[in-house]
Amino acid sequence: MEDYPRTVQEFESRFSTEEGCRAYLVSLRWPDGFQCPRCKATNAVVVRKTLFQCSSCRRQSSATAGTIFQDTRKPLVMWFRAMWYVTSQKNGASALGLQRVLGLASYETAWTWLHKLRRAMVRPERDRLSGWVEVDETLVGGLEEGASGRQTARKAWVVIAAQADGAGIGRIRMRMIRDGSAVHLHSFVEDCIEPGSLIHTDGWQGYAGLEKKGYQRQVTKLKHRREETSRLMPRVHRVASLLKRWLLGTHQGGVAYYYLPYYLDEFTFRFNRRKSRSRGKLFFRLMQQAVTTSPKTYESMVRCASHKALHVGAS
Image (cartoon, rainbow, N blue to C red):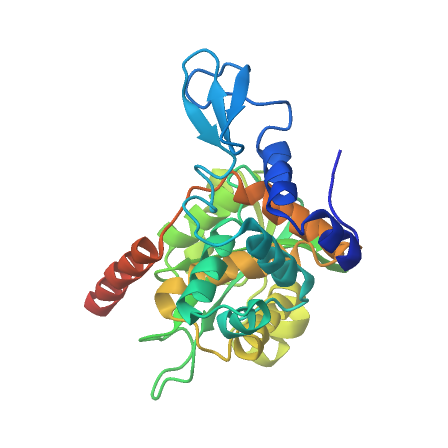
């Protein structure tokens, strides 16, 4: 049974205490009852109010260990409010906006929390797209002097897949790729789209050979017809337009190249749930994934980004 608050009043009533928040995390992490992470035993006693001690191997576990909340110094009440705010805003939240709403003293804390949440917005076992799927790439970033078409020095390549839902758009997938070669495009298609699906692409050679991997392919050549792309491949171009508008609007275009993949994850999470009647359900989905997402520290995220920056600069 899906258990989540439907209104802000219900949210405040349920999650105004640490006990209420922790009980909710326990119910999501162990929906069928406690199970020891080490020996899988199901019997435990509660010690120090927040720890489960396994009756078999004596290991102590908490509801936050191994999740994005691990080692947090802030109250869970504040974390829950942050997650409600992020999921209830139609266009998401910037770190500055979250800092102001929660009254956080540090911008760094708000930035870190948002990046932890973005890492929880992807289910590793999520279903692949199927049926009729449009696939195309776009370049994300500012204008580059002297660059045109598929040429780029600092823009990011983003490949988009949009599943057809009648005349509209169903679910989407996105990925930042190094370039538009077949190596990267084929890998994206195989990871994100079920074999047997009909893939609609333009005439770019990077998509050639997908038929040999179990896909059907329809090709629409766009050379000398760029002004018609929004009509010939409407779904992916609509998604690309919305993505760029979101990056410029909510984040003021200030997304660093090496953090872009996580923003793509957030956009996909929101887009695929845009028709949800209750924003509380987005909170519920994010919370479900937060308790199964490994913890990350600010230092590890910045160190990883610095490594990627050096790699990009050397390429």
